[in-house]
Each structure stands twice: as structure tokens, then as C-alpha cells.
Image (cartoon, rainbow, N blue to C red):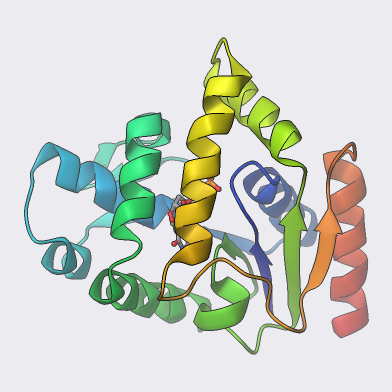
Length: 204
Ligand code: CDP
């Protein structure tokens, strides 16, 4: 079974997806970490993005490893976020990373999160959720994660990245037609996880 969780930055995807996977005993795929690791690799060593995507050596676990090096922290920076969103507009980059995601999701039970899991990566996922929250709440959460002093600066970057992710031609961020939209504004992680776990039980 695949549970697809898509949504914009700060909507709670990672926290909810991780907790849900833990609660259900499913594996967890953070597709955004792949785009981020690729972006970091290209920032450090410029080159052809599609070629690098095809040869990307990334391990996703509790830590994210790029070419064997722990990059868990490094991929969270605002520079990497922006670069990830930029390279994610390139169709050849997307198809290389989507191939890897589909190969992983082919076996076992998964909670997979990203922007296009329910629309492109696994359109036949048993459960599809689209998480949202107000832009202000999302920026406050992300500022807290980053230890950033001013959430308004985070809001500005987030607004640009949201627009880029929603308006790109290939696999734009949007809910799948059959996705359940959940607004997480003002709701606890446990509450949202319980709602999705109920959807999963019903789908099983
Ligand atoms: O954690 P946050 O939601 O801020 O970002 P992320 O999920 O780590 O994704 C970083 C960037 O990668 C996004 O802004 C997207 O441009 C891109 N991405 C994508 O295009 N498709 C995915 N399935 C996952 C991420």
C-alpha cells in the first residue's frame, strides 16, 4: 500500500508522513530530499543537472547521505530550497528522480511525500492526501524549524517557491482529483496523523 502525501512547504508533510509511517509500520519516502540532495550536489560542483540526476548517489534514511556523506542539515538551507525548486522544473531531472521513486515504491508499504506523488509518481496510490495550511502558519513553522529570527523573511522565500512549484509546466504542485485535502492550520500532528490512518484503514 502507498499513502501519498503532497502539499506546499510547511504544510506539515514531513512531520505527518514520518509519524504516520512509524504508527503504521510503513516505510517513509521523502522525495523532496532527493531534489534537495541533487541541488546541493550541483551548487557544490556545477554541471549538467539531468546527467547528475541520473547518476545521483543518495541514501534516504534517518540521515540523508549524498555520495556517502551526511547532508541531513546541509540540504535544509534556504539556498538549497531555492535551488531544489529551480532544478525541479527541468523535465529530464524529474523523470530521472521519478524513476528512482517508482522503483522504491514498487515493493512494500510506504508513506511517500512530495509535490507530485499522487498526481505523477503513484497515481494509483491507495490513499492520497493534500496537506495545506495558511501561508503565515507555514512560514512560522518553517522559521521555527530553521531557528530563523524573522518568519516574514521565510514567508517571502516561501511565497516565491510556492509560485515556482505551482506554475511550472511539468508536474506542478496541485492536488490529485481524488486527493483528500486536509487543512492543518491550528491542528496537532497527532490529530492529522489519526485522520490519515483512518483513511488508510478504510482503503484497506
Ligand atoms: O520541505 P519542503 O516542503 O519545503 O520541500 P521539499 O519537499 O523538501 O521539496 C523541495 C523542493 O523540491 C520543492 O520546492 C519542489 O520544487 C521540489 N519537489 C518536487 O518538485 N517534487 C517532489 N516530489 C518533491 C519536491
